[in-house]
Length: 298
Image (cartoon, rainbow, N blue to C red; front, side, top):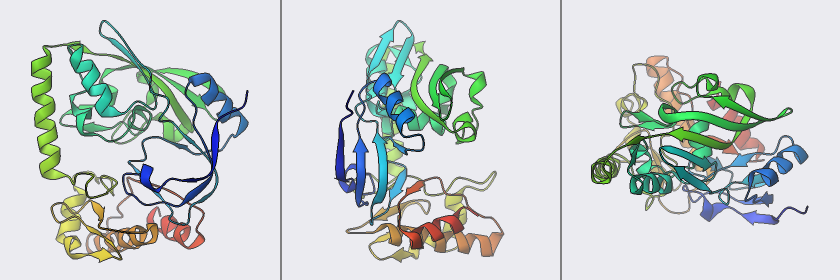
């Protein structure tokens, strides 16, 4: 079976950062069987979801990638919900609300997709995606399709078994709680208002939180104390309202972002001896950028 793909795929406008060059080959599976065939055929191929937590090099990426946005099936049977990896968080949140199901109120303001949210155990407002998971169907690179229970997934703050075992999330099954849809919608509205007040909208292109929070030391607070809000590089800058966000004010580049991230990390390290860990991912073939990315992860 021939897979659908595009050569020299211009990815910039698909990313929430509005940064990125051309991808040599981009594949778009729309079902699990096709997705698995691609993963078997190209064992080390990067998998990209809603492109809301990744910085792609302005120089592009000289390789193949899989984009999951066509993997968007949702099934609801009573309180059981099954969602493919490419389903967007806000869409899932709205659909379960319409079915009088609670547990995904926190996802209403997330620009990400289910695969990425399970991979990193996304959380907000006292809820996290692992709260209601029953099973996760994954592809374990080099092995094949494996189904894990919630207890087997090793969920913790911003992490899961996926990182350790090189897993690709294909689909997840959840068990939610029944609740009046008006109560659910009220909580969703409050969550959206909080996000609007505390995080930049995508009118200002951004990639969400740049660094993970060290235990007991919110990254935003550390960054603000070292003067982060006054910093910029090229056409990207630290958001005025929260120091752990970088926004693209025009035609910012990946090098602008990486340079600013490095400056922010070094300031915090010099002041507090804390090495902030990137929350976002990077994909690119630019050697100079790769050197900076390596330093950011030391």
